[in-house]
Image: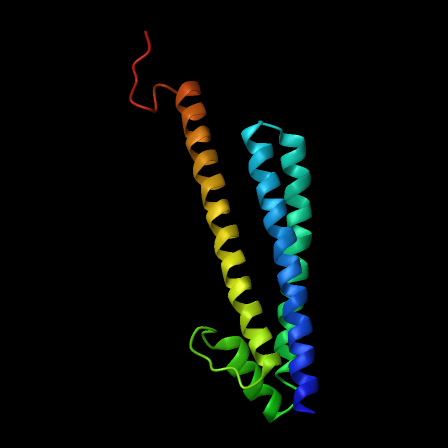
Length: 144
């Protein structure tokens, strides 16, 4: 019974990893579209990313629901999903697989967040430069 729970959890985490891989690819595509000033592609990728975020949220809800089945499931999900994967000791090969997935998921999330941050900074800088060019009087420049 416990092995079935672990297998379900491993499957859900593998699905999460796949969703996040696609989200990372889309984030890279978004950065490329913005660097080309391609608004059409950027808007398309933003919509696709929104769908991917929804899939990610649904997957998280499924993981949490697995932990609500009974007390043992709650303890399992708490130990393997909510704890730091670097500090949890795997009790068998399935748990080791789960913890490895968690580490890979953590790395993917960090990469996505970093790429998002870079895209946002670049776009904010470009938007600021355009605003200053269009409104020099508000940027402290005097026009005569």
